[in-house]
Image 1 (tube, each protein chain N blue to C red):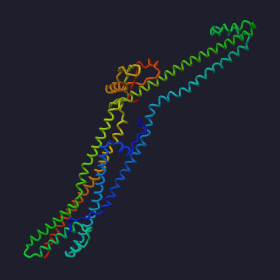
Image 2: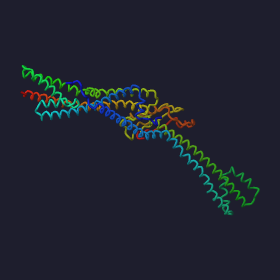
Image 3: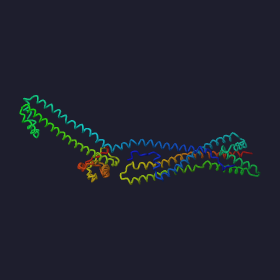
Image 4: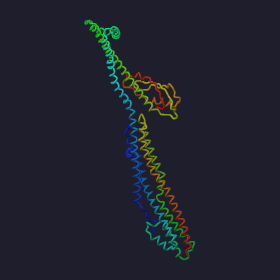
Length: 225
Length: 251
């Protein structure tokens, strides 16, 4: 009977039904993409945190805003952090408004804040890109895997109905190959969920950092003659 | 302010790392499952034993058969010295000992008498008597051998019957779906009536185990095991017409 049942992974997948194979393929693709984004975001966020720290350091040690602006603009696009862009946008707007005569101090500050706000939102959008993908992979792929498993088990039991004397050995391979789909779904989902939570937390921290910087920078600008 | 052009760093390293993670995962899956498959092998070996065990049990007793056939000559050897002793003590013991063999082997006696009459010497008579006795002993030995053979046959039949009873028990036991909370000392006795061919006619519970769930499980297993294995020799069927079987959860 089933003395030498080959239960290797390759055998299981190649013997699975077409739908289960499709589900497995989809999950593999999704998992690859989610891992790609995980690493992409990991590098991006780490880079962002480093640049933010560097610029904050420079900002608090250098009281000359013009020099700071030069410093912020001199760095290449790659080394330009979100905070530098916010600073540059606010400073440029402030200088422009100051040059125009007859603009009230309050209006200057409002314009500067709006400019910083816009850049801040654009930066946040950039930082949060792909996070939604990770979130949906984390929540949906277990269900997709479960769907493949249910389908595979359905097939296994349907095959069982044709066998007179049913033993566990008749169902076991079918269930095993069906469970590969669940394993695949979980493999895609777990890292995605962990990464999403971690990155969301880190981006949240960055965002409060940007917010407080905006406020502090506004104060600094207000004190400018 | 080229805010719309973003530099997404490390696209390639991220892709390579993602591929790496997946290859590690699949290597783990592949080797993990391979490893498990080797672990399954012993289990399947025990399954094989189920079908081959009874045959192996039958095989060993065949060898003792040959050994048991050999012993009958031994009694003959022991008998011969007895005969030799009376020959030496010709005068006195012969008359006493002669009557003994006669009642034993009256059928062979005439032959011995015919041979004995022409030669009328008394010592020869003793010898003839001894020869007659020897023949008688040989015949007795033959009879014994035949009896032994019959006993062997009966034993062989008994062995076949035992083997198939064990097979029937094993088949039924395999089909028992154990209900929970069955005491280890539960003991259900059933009488199973069979038709030729192994079809189960009915199963009557003789003694309940005290646990109705277990009784029902056993009864269901008996009916589910239809047809039961029977020896190929149809003449043995009378031994299987009604089977008294005891089922214990620990077996």
